[in-house]
Image 1 (spheres, helix red, strand yellow):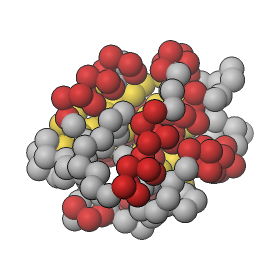
Image 2: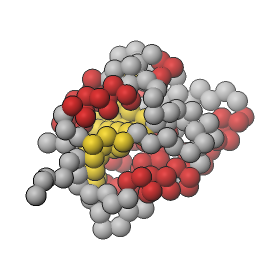
Image 3: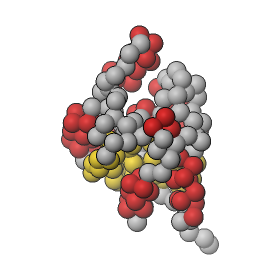
Length: 194
């Protein structure tokens, strides 16, 4: 009987897609190391809604367990945390949160503010998440135009017991920032998948 592989779900962010930035590179690197990697296209990414995104995660992940890991970017981190807070009697291997946030800066249009509002205001059950997730690592950039480094580092450390890593001058670490490889994400996955 074969040992079941570790499953890695890479969740893109607002206006993102499975082929952007460092996602294809990470999938290739993790697949080479014997992991099953899934990068679902999240629904209506230009207008992300909490229920649509958490329901999408339920449908693609199906039966999460301790061999289930998430690498998420930006609003994808919010979606993963909200999905996990709804799990019952389950354990998850871990989360790598890249450019994750609990507060935002740099939103310029009323539309952006309207889209972000529920994500920023609807409560997250951090205590439940900590009881479900074995390990959390948060990766930030020191010049992210949307994510306040000090405030979000504090939240991830205080609320989720996350280990925090800070990249130098990688912006929001999305496709628009021309970040096509993210070795810290790969190293982090390998570390928590041991």
